[in-house]
Amino acid sequence: MGTKLHLRTIATIWVVAALVIGILCGAYWLQSNRKWSDHLTHAYSAGVEAYYTLESGGNTADVQTTLISNIDKDLASAGRFEQISGVSRPAYVTLLSLRNAIGNPTSISGTKIAVVSGRMQYRVAEIASGTYSSPALQFGELTRLLATYCSDPVIFAKSTGRDWVRIDGTAVWGCDAAPSDYRIGVSIVLLLTLAILITQIGNTTEAFERFSRQLLARKHVGGPDSYETTGPRELSEIVSTVNSYLEEERDQLNKRAIILSGVSHDLGTPATRLRLRATLIEDPTIREKLEADIDQMTGIIESVLTYTRSELNSEEPQKLSLTSLIEALVADYQDTDHPVSLEASTPLQTKADRSIFAPRSGNVAVGDTSKLLMYGRPIALRRAISNLIDNALKYGRRASVSVQSDSNWAIVTVEDEGGESSAAEMEQLLNPFARGDNTQTISGFGLGLTIVATVARQHGGRIDFEDGRAGVVAKLWLQRS
Image (cartoon, rainbow, N blue to C red; front, side):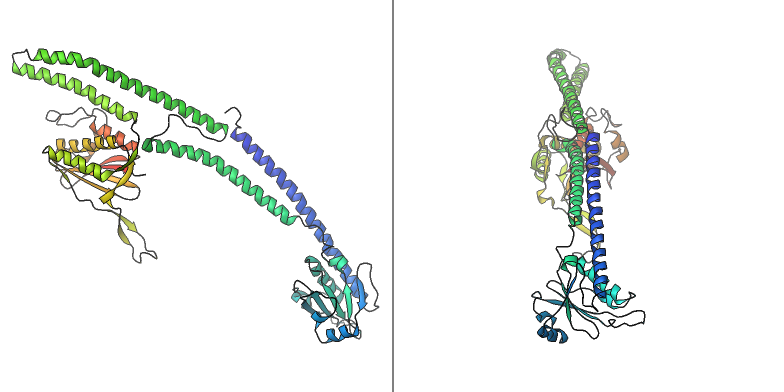
């Protein structure tokens, strides 16, 4: 843990790294923008200058104008520019007529232009619409457009009263003249930086979330004696604190169980002697009361020990059939002539909206309880369901058991046939050592429902009570996965 960085330090490193990369990428971006702006401006200026040399047939420093052969002139006049010698194959031809937009035509205002490229045709609609004030400016816009793309085009031009000429300005608007463009690379670097930052942030938050899920699942599927995780120092400190807490809690529960076991064992011998001596008492009434007190004393100790063992949560969860467990448990009660019945279970009903699979909205059945599989602790579950059945028999004379399920939950329902207790009163019996009003007529020490609630929490669920048609309905919610 000593070599791990604090979350604040990690965040600072990320911010500084992102800032440096952003500044460098911004500088390269601006540099590319400036170079391309200068390149396009130079191409525009060279085009305007080249246009003014068409009448004299001269050349500029960067643009060469030459007459083409008679054969090529005939091909150009026929509009077959792709067949002219010296052009790329295949050839894409872009035609443009330069006009004087201000209504003052000159001798070359009717210049015809043909651009032959081996890669593309150019969008010259805006130039051809005459939005620029003179043909020279129009030609400058054309050369700016040519410089925008890497296609090494060849220009053929014919002014009024002159022959077709070939204009070669690849030194200005060709591929080799274009400056290096870092903008695509800069965009990729920025996207990669953003992806790395998002990944790092996601990994850090996932480390906290993963540890949180492990703690939430601990009460359902158990957990190790201690946790280990990767992440910033703050998470390591949290894990260390949780491990210390779990160790302390485990030690306290073990000590409690040891003490109670010792007390139960130590009380065994005196209790046995008391039973033997009680048999010597001639008065049967006094003898029975004394034996009842001894049974109550040992029963309280055993009940508390059972509750402590359930808190220890030492049983490993395993895959089990809840339906088979309940069927076997109910059969055991029936074999001993207890009024316990297993009712046919119905699938849970849920609200379904209209979709392509269900043209009508309404309630649909979810789950099949004929083979209800789940992860749980079979001994703890058997004890909890037994306590619910015993509670129903004590307070309501009969017990009716059923089970429902969906993809997430299994619900064990135990309903009695009616007694003096209500659902609200049964909720109060969840507290340790709480008992109902008829404590004089029923046995128990007030820990049965407390154990049920503990087992339900260990399985990610809860215990609820409802007033049914005949009596009180207890629902034990268990998480299946």
